[in-house]
Every structure is written in structure tokens, then in C-alpha cells.
Image (cartoon, rainbow, N blue to C red; front, side, top):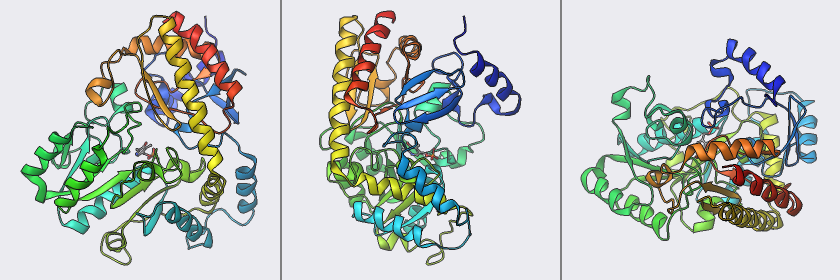
Amino acid sequence: MNNYPISSQLFERAKQVIPGGVNSPVRAFRGVGGTPLFIKSAKGCFLHDADGREYIDYVGSWGPMILGHAHPEIIAAIQEVATHGTSFGAPTELEIELAEEVIRAYPSIEKLRLTSSGTEATMSALRVARGFTGRAKIVKFEGCYHGHGDSLLVKAGSGVATLGLPDSPGVLPEVASNTITVPFNDVPALEAVFDQAGAEIAAVIIEPVVGNMGCVPPQEGYLQAVRDITAKHGTVLIFDEVMTGFRVAFGGAQERYGITPDMTTLGKIIGGGLPVGAFGGKREIMDCVAPVGPVYQAGTLSGNPLAVTAGLTQLRLLRNPEIYAHLERVTKKLVAGFTEAASEAGVSTVSNRVGSMCTAFFTAEPVIDWTTAAKSDREAFGRFFHAMLEEGVYLAPSQFEAAFVSYAHTDEIIERTIAAARKAFAKV
Ligand SMILES: *Cc1c(COP(=O)(O)O)cnc(C)c1O
């Protein structure tokens, strides 16, 4: 039986011309089996697939769609700006406005540069940190994903973990050898690395709330310890807020936890569903970037007017604190409902949540890092995922992803989702 005949046909056709039929591996359903849905349209919290089925969406394009899909004001703004031309390769006032909007919300950022993806933002931030410090090594955390840049594709969480590729061929050992990985939420492990090599470490890059091994919050005092250790050794602390920026609070994890990094990378939400990334930080660091300084970084379509307009419109709408209060409240309700449904069905789950990011791990013990996340029962998750799909709920097709709730998810939608989960847990 195949409920998705048109998606299946499209998938077969796509595989002829696109590796694995997808333009980003996590879309391929490898972690759960089956055929990825081909999407025709989306509106609010709903997705519509090629077979004409409707789903409540908890992927939100992997984070950007915090106001829901096809928000009328964002669509209107893109349409209007498009009539004036789609790209100039010269500066525009819109780029200043987006930079000013971000800087107002992130006091740690004094200057920023726009890119077209989160990957470019993190790659560039690392280059700048290395240029600024004159040091070679970087530290990242097991299970954190920072895009697919060479030096960051080491123990890199969801996509890689789901595919079972510990490292990617094509990443040279001499590049990867400058990347040190330590477990998340483990202060002594980080201290040990700094005791040994502190003077060689250019940067520590961290997801302050991890989203890419599923949602894993920092333990009490952890981010402060990371801040203290890096400050002591003159190492640049980079908060990769590509996912958490404007998500866990308007001012990101740095606002929520009150920690000031030296540099920040952004993406996802700041593009409003179009391709935008950004890296920024202290003036003295950002003044290393060309043309002011010697560290080269560039992009033909960086600051693209359509993308910047979508992002700017979304950020201005997000200034309303009522949105974050709603997200907090309904996501809490969703997690409580899932936990109750799982225990009624006798399925062990542990749920983590920060703001409108959450993950139900199919495991019995607390999930605090990659080792504990990896103990989850992926097969049980796969059965749950497909049962939810049958019930009209679209979750991320991997145990190691966060679910994203949007402002378009009403109480009634959350209740429908919990009712679906009750049926799905019974089939696990
Ligand atoms: C998604 C993500 C990236 C990569 O962004 P792309 O736009 O996919 O290149 C980097 N860091 C984090 C934390 C992310 O969640």
C-alpha cells in the first residue's frame, strides 16, 4: 500500500538527476525509511503535499518559519521589492536596516556581515577568529552541527549521524586535525583541552542550545563556564545561533541565558524563509574583515534585496513579545501532551524543550549530550514518525532534530497534534 503515489513517482524521477533525489540529505527520510513527501504549498502551520494531503508542520523549513508559512505581510513585502529588481551587486539601504535591526536585538554584535546561508556564516566566522588570533585550532562539541564547512564536519550531529557517516570523505585529515571535539555540557573536558592547548585555540564554536542532536539545553552554569574558560585563554567564543537566534528569545540564547559571546552566527529566521545568514561580533574582531582588514570574505548574492526584505519584515513582526509568550505557552502544552500520551502507551520518552524548540527522545534517561541522545531507540522513533504522518502530522524525519512550533500553531492545533500522538504512540 502506498499513500503517497505522486511523491513516490517524483522521488524516482528526482533520483535520476539529483543525488538521492534531494538537495539536502536530511530531507531524504533515510533516518526513518520510506519516501520523502514532495511539497506543493504551505500556509500557516500547514503543509500540502503533491498527493493532496494536508499536514500540521513541525519542521518549519528547519526553523525559519517562526510566523508560519506564507505570512501575508512577508509575501507582500517580497512581491513589492521584486518589482524594483532582484539583485544589484551593489549596496542597498535595506542591508543597513537589517544589520541595525539585528544589532539592536544582539548587543554583543557591533558589526555584522550578511551571507546567503548559515554554513557560510560559520565558515567565515572561523576564518575571522583565526585571522584575529593568529591561532589554528578550533573547539566544537560532539553532536553540534555548524553547516557543512570542512573544519566543522567532525562529529556533527543530525544529518551526519542519521546517515551514519562519522566523518565525510573529502574532508582532509590535516584540516580536521585542527578541530578538537569535546562532549557538550562537560566543563572538565573543556578545561582539560584548554590546559593542554589553550594558547593554540582560535575559537570555540557552540550551539548554546543544541538543536542538531535533537534539543539539548545547556545545564545550569555551563555557558558561563565556557565563557570564562575562553576569556581566560584569549579564545574567541562563537555562539552559533543560526537555529536559536530569534527562536529561543528575540535576542537568542545569549539573551535567554545572559551570556555575551565575542561573535555570533545567524541564519534561518533572519531570512524569513529566503536565504540569509550573518556573522558579527565585537568591532575589533569584525574590523579584521575585508575591505577594512585582511581576512577575505565575499558573496555575489550576499544582502540580496528579496532575501533581506523577507528577513527584515519577519524580524519587525517578531518585535511583539506576545509572539514569544504564545510560543512558550503552546510548546509547553505540546510537550506535556506528548509526555502524557507516551506514558499512557507505556513508551519511554524524555522530552527537552527551550522556548519553541523541543524533542521527544525515545529513551528513559536524561539527554544532556551526544552520548545520551544516541541511546534513543531510532526504530521506535521511525514507527512513531510514520504513524504521525498517517495522522497528518509532519515531524522532522530524524530522532536527532528539534521540532519547531510557530505562531500559527493555535491551541486547537496543539490539541489535534496531541490526539494524533496518542494514536501514534499506541502503534510504537
Ligand atoms: C542550520 C544550521 C547551520 C547551517 O545553516 P545552513 O543555512 O543550512 O547552511 C549552522 N548552524 C546551525 C546551528 C544550524 O542549525
